Length: 383
View 1 (cartoon, rainbow, N blue to C red):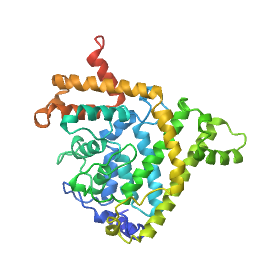
View 2 (view 1 turned 120 degrees about the vertical axis):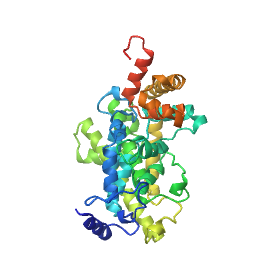
View 3 (view 1 turned 90 degrees about the vertical axis):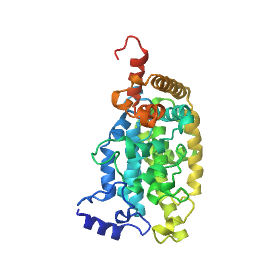
View 4 (view 1 turned 120 degrees about the horizontal axis):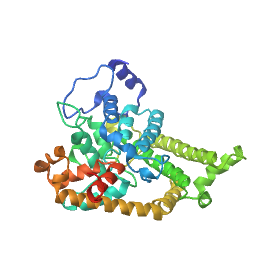
């Protein structure tokens, strides 16, 4: 679709409070417009083709890569978030291309070994600015990716970069940077990615927990939200096997939450009489949100996952082990940076050894970190 036709589509289809590509605040480095793709479509494509996005395939969500091929990784999680977010954006008549770009980019700054990796890097970098995966994600797309001769980074649009910085959830803290007006709520596109992220990880972590055996189905019987969907499945499919019933329940849980989010957000927009994008920016709380009834249904499930999955002794052991790996890698590299690849060493004089080492480790996959650990500390391993 030629760019002028695409803009006509946005003008006719998108809600007045949606972000339109013609209104983008642009890129740090000016580029010629593409004849067939909007700025947000180009951003999405740059993200998908980036090295950081490919590495998400081997970065932990909850289960480390070597524990099995079934479990979600940061890559499959990002794809699931994107799918859920696009559905919500379509229903609310928001910009699906911007939504998809933010969703696919929201975890680019994650370390190996999930939140355990982030926690230990933040501790090790405490006297050098700390570590936050949203801020690291911005650093990845602004600086660390090297693909273009004219500039460093991916040169993404301001709106996608804002979405990365202001991403927030139970596990994610938005970063305050003056360029992105921290006093203002982010776009609805960013807000719905936050919600889609929560829906995705709650339900796929439950799926992975059941598949791994760390969660037993009998333990879920006291949860109203699980029982609500399970009853419907049992009424319709009396003799269905356990494995298929699990998929149907997970699907039902996602559908319940997505539908509620769409309907409740529509009501909130109507109640606040949001007429345009500038009016939206004056609201000082998130409009994309669940109803109180569904919030109350979700709360016990999230508490259950925290206690029975994220704090399960096997997950805790792996997290503790991962922190030990990363700490020892960090200390070894900072003490003897000559062991870093030559092209990485070149940045030390300008950026400092700790920040360079932090970037290097944060960019590793689980597999890469484990292999590097063996190369550095196993005397029988080839270097």
